[in-house]
Each structure stands twice: as structure tokens, then as C-alpha cells.
Length: 434
Ligand code: GDP
Ligand code: GDP
Image (cartoon, rainbow, N blue to C red; front, side, top):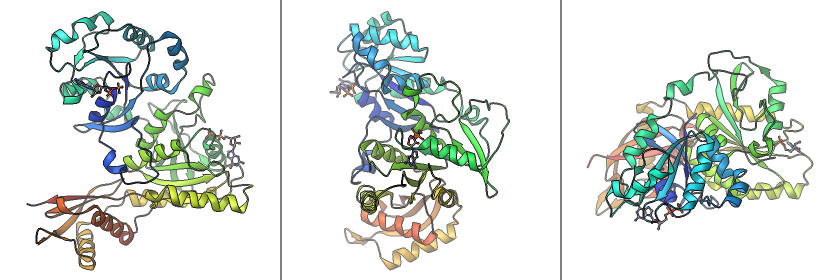
């Protein structure tokens, strides 16, 4: 599971500014995708080869009354479930009573904390951070988020405080890892229980696998799968169930961890902002995706037509994903999900040869040549695979920076179609020799 870093602090201390620096900006990706909410609350980033998930908890007010009610909210849940908390304060505003109140709560959380003093631009760092020692959270890190100053040394310390990736991989059973995600009450646990009730559930004993493991391995038609339990199917303690029933963070981690995401939508409710924002993260993560429209039972025909139209209209950017209309409760069409999950997995992890990619590239270019730029034609010479899950196709040529988005989309669609890559997004990267 990828580590989760939560950004916490009063409003205006610079959380979203730091968030933007720590995450690959999603704007480029979602800018022209109608229906996709631009959610600035969670994103992913990387330092060197270390990936992480960042959650902006939004403005936590320090006022006690409000903090109490917030304890039960997603913001504090995010703190509880994060691996690392970056507590941000503002050097310009100085140390305020709200900072003390938040610090107190954070101390009680027992989390690994980093005290980050932002906006140190214009003053000497040691001077700017001096008063914040009074919070008793150790040595403050001085940064200027808007200028990108001090962020790299901070993140190096943050990532050094995390267990390494190999330790995180321990205890993962073999098989196609599937994350069932979706809003509360959409039917995730009903579906998981139905699947696990019908299939041969595999016991998996290995060091690091506990009874609380979130991995639920099973076998179907000779294929091994592993459900990543985001719905708390196997939760031992039922305490705090209402709060924990839906956890954005667990969902994000499961998405990153999965080979294939199975996103459930509610046939009665249509597509909400929360759905769109989850799907935005799935898209950003490049994961293979299968959509299940649940609670299909007992729907009138006009309702069925409506939800079909809703999906076409609101999720055109997910056209690579197979859609199934299911009833987790009655088991209708649940079997079909597996064919799509397996196909999506195979497409996402397939090895593509340089020869076949280059030949296909040449065919695509011949059928529809790239445009002229300043009197010269853009040349695309050869292609090779740059990664799996999702498949990344790297194309080498000249003046590739001038390739318009519409042409890139043409290439992506062409590769997708002719290679028969179903259920997975395909990424095309253009590299220039000049
Ligand atoms: P949030 O409410 O905690 O998310 O804070 P924002 O990221 O929206 O930042 C609040 C304000 O502080 C904005 O006007 C930012 O431009 C400004 N700001 C953020 N980081 C810095 C910094 O390093 N130096 C200065 N001088 N201003 C900053
Ligand atoms: P979760 O929060 O996503 O895990 O949702 P649950 O699995 O707990 O389901 C929430 C409610 O929806 C329960 O009352 C289920 O019985 C009901 N439900 C789940 N799947 C279906 C379905 O296919 N059809 C109908 N009619 N109800 C369903």
C-alpha cells in the first residue's frame, strides 16, 4: 500500500499551495474532461522512485467546539489513517492559539508528525521558525511553498520515516488484485460477500498476513483473485463502524494497490460528485477499470434508460471501461464482471513488442499523418513500451512537442483498438530527437 501523507493546519497557512507542489498536477489531465470534478483534496506524487498519496484535510479550525465535531469528520479520519502528518503553520501570521489547539489534538493522535513552517520567504529561516518551538513538536522545517523552497529536504525526511516498499509488499497473496470501490451503501460489502460466498475462498498463510488482513483471496475458474477489502467485510471490531464505513483514504490506497478497480455506481442515484471525484483519481492512477451499475433489480425500463444515458453523458472519458448492470443482492450478472476484470488485467499487463508497436505506429501515421508545423511535418519514427498497468507507449520522433492533443488522442485510440487493449487506459508519451 502506498504511504499516505496528510496536510493539516489552519486555513490559509498554505496547504493547497504545498499540495500542488507535492502532487502531479491533475489539471492537465482533467481540464477538458466534462463531468470530471476537479478535486483538489487528494492526489499522488513521487520523490525519486518513491510514490505517495497526499490528502489535503482542508481548513481545520482550531476552535475547540468545532474541533470536537470535526473529530468524527473525514478530516480527522484522514489524520488517523495517514502514515505521516505534515502540520503546517504560517511564519507571517506567527504562532496563534488555534495552532496550539490543533497541535494538542495531533499529539493525541500518536501519529508521526512533521512541523512545517511555511512562508519563510523574506525572512531568515531560523528567525521565522523560532517561536514555533513552543509547540513542542520538535525541530520545525522551514519552507516557502509558493516558491518551492525547502520542500525537497522536507520530503526526503518524510519518506525516510516510512517503511520501505518491500516491507509493504509482504503478505500480499498472489492473484489479480481487485479493489471494489464506491460510495457508502452502493453495495460493496454485499457484492464482496456474494463473491466470497460463492467462490472457493483461499486461506493464505504467510508472515505479515494477519486475520485483520485487508486481502481476501479466492479462486474462480482456476484463476486466483484477491479482493482488497475497502468495505470492512472482515473487520473484527465493529466499533466506529459508522465513521469508518466509508474511508476515502483506504479507497485511494486500494486503487493504487489494485491491478483492476471495480467501481460500483448506484442505479437509483445516478452519478454524484463523489463518484466523479473517485473516478478522477482512478483515471489519474491509470488503473484498469470495470464499472458495475448496482441495484439493477426492480428498476423500471425508463429508469434503466436514464442511467444508461447518464453514464454516456457524464463519463465519456471512461469509454475504455466495460459497464455491467448488476444486482449484488440477487447475484444477477455478477459472473460477467469476472470476464471483464480478467480481460482488463491481461490488457493492462500485456508485453508489447517494439516491432509490433512501431509497425502499428507507421500504419496509424500513414492513415492519418500528423500536421505540419512551421512548414515541416512532424515525424514519428518508432515506438516501444515504457511501462505496464497502465500500458505506456513511448514514441520517438521530431518536433513531438507540437503534436496537438487531438492527434495524441487519435494515436491512443488507434493503439487501444488495434492492440485490443480493453478495460485499461493507454498512455502515450512523445519524445523528441530535436
Ligand atoms: P490553505 O488555505 O492552507 O490551503 O492555504 P493556501 O495554499 O490557499 O494559501 C493561502 C495564501 O498563502 C495564498 O494566498 C498563497 O499564495 C499564500 N502562500 C502560500 N505559500 C506561501 C509562501 O510560501 N510564501 C508566501 N509569501 N505566501 C504563500
Ligand atoms: P456498502 O456501504 O457499499 O458496503 O453497501 P452495502 O453492501 O452495505 O449495501 C447497502 C445497502 O444496499 C444494503 O441494505 C444492501 O442490502 C443494499 N443492496 C446492496 N446491493 C443491492 C442490490 O443489488 N439491490 C438492492 N435492491 N439492494 C442492494
